[in-house]
Amino acid sequence: TAATTPSTTTSNTTTPPSRTHTPDISVISAELLLAVANRVSSKNKTERRDAITGLAQIFHKHYIRKILRHVQDGGDDCDIEVILRVLHEHCSEEQIKKYKFVVEAEEKFGWIPQKVFECVYFSDATDPELRNRIYQIVDDVLLDGGLTATSRAVGLAIILHGLKKKGKENAFKWMCALFSQRSQLQRALGLYLDARVKAKGCEAGSAEAFTADAEAMEKLEVVASLSSPLVGISSSNSDSSADMSSVLKRFHTAKDKHIFRILSTIASPTHSPSARKRAFDELPKRTKGMGAVSVAWTKALARRCSMGAFVNFESIEHCIILAQESFEANDCKVSSLFLTCVKTMIAPFPALAATKESFKNLVEFLEVVRTDVTPEAKKELEEYGIVTLISDILAKSASSMPASDVGGKGNGDDEETISIYETLRSQLLRLCKNDGTPEQARNSVHALSSLVNPVSQHLSLPSRVKKEKKEFEPLLKALVAPSRLAVPDDSMASKQKSKIVSVLSAIAAVAECAPYAFNSTGEGKTPLCWGERAIDFSLNAVLLGKNTSSNLSNEEYSSDSGSESETESPAKGRRSSTARGNKAAVASSKENDKVNISVHCRMICASIEVLICHIRATIVRAKADGAKSELEAPSTEHV
Image (tube, rainbow, N blue to C red):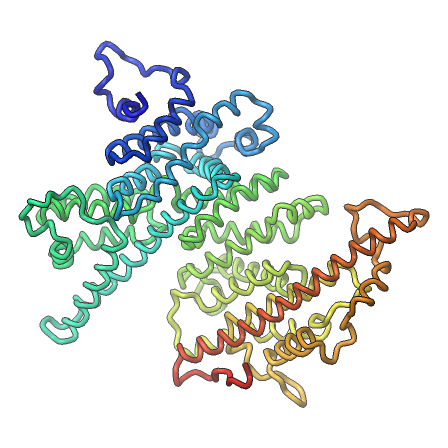
């Protein structure tokens, strides 16, 4: 029975002609669904495909659609209170336990996405048709195109929250691997199309044209290795189109330019659903003359390359908007849920959050959480890591921004773009110099580096170095100031002590992203470059303990442990002057020892990171820029 269930789920061949309605899902037990799931491991490939397809269709129709019905009814402008209620009912463990029907539905259907992504384990070498089916299920079944963008964003949050639960980590990793392969395929296809255009631009019959054409063909072979292999071909088939090299040659020499124009529209993750639909409709017609096998391979290429309904720029844009609306509704937990979705999906597709609208919303969100919050809200922000999530997203997405969208005076951008850029820059610099955590400081430097020298903007070396120094020299000068770059004293509050770790993390990021600024000459009678001052502090003051007044021993830890401020650890309760007995003193001493040890250990690790980033970035950049580089690789003695 379990083996035939998938076929009856996806087909009506076994349904009596007199039946006019689908039986209620309640008649199918959870045990039967689990039995169907076990057939995914079957040796029969058709049975595997049918089993996972049927489960995915059941999940969509009888679970996620029902969960999202009120959000769907509200359209793209659905009230945030409706969305918050849905997410709390299905993503909050406390709320789930209150409703028996939610628990039953979760146990019966909630595991199906996990099973879908675990099927990514079957590689192209093992079962290419199943892998093609998984792409189709993820793109068109789990969250189909009939849902609004808001519904898909909420559905994405629910599914990813389920995949991150304990015991489902493997499914989450397989999902990341699937999208990583798509991202690699998109990049490879884009490189091939560029190489093909370059080859077509060369003089026909020239040596340059032959060389460029060979390079383009090599890039097409890379595309083929990341796409679907040829499937469903009989070994007795004598058609030359059945050979992969012949298929690629026919494809590469196709006369129809629209084939490559259509593919170029889906080679970027930010393409629209209409571009995907046009590729599916037009490519089979335009490649028909190449043979059935070539048509099938081209369709599979389009399927694997294009962004489906599960994740695309629309759903990510709505996740960012919903995260901001959730925060404004005083729900940081849900806000972090949406931001986690964005962070997860821009790891393989950073351009999804680099669209003008999404980036603008992220900058506005960062400004709000950094300037206009109450003390209670600030505590929640820290608890759920909202600022860290936003800074991480900005650091990754800024690297994929088009050069025309990177604001800055003199770039010809409109006033709104310049204003957004200045707002972002000021907030990122504050995170670096003032009150950011080590991770926030590091993310801020990476975001600034991407904004100053975006990947899409091909500048000459002198221009790039000039922009780099202009942006990072003032920042580095501020970071190495004695007021910031100093070993913390035990008499300082724990929050003040931790600032040195953030400063060193920011310096390490500058050394990695801006080696020219890091090695630029400083000021004064005995000019050390700003980077040398940071190296001197990291090596001599922190690691070797030279010339420091705060080089603490174990005795000093214990002797100064009672000098902490009473307001430093409010979570432990307020201590009165009459509650200073032996037990309280011992407990306080142990707690302060932990804080001191933690800060000093992290400071040592951050100092080592500064030295490593400096050596690595200097060597790599000096070799990459060649003879024109001002940098000199560090000598063996220096290292």
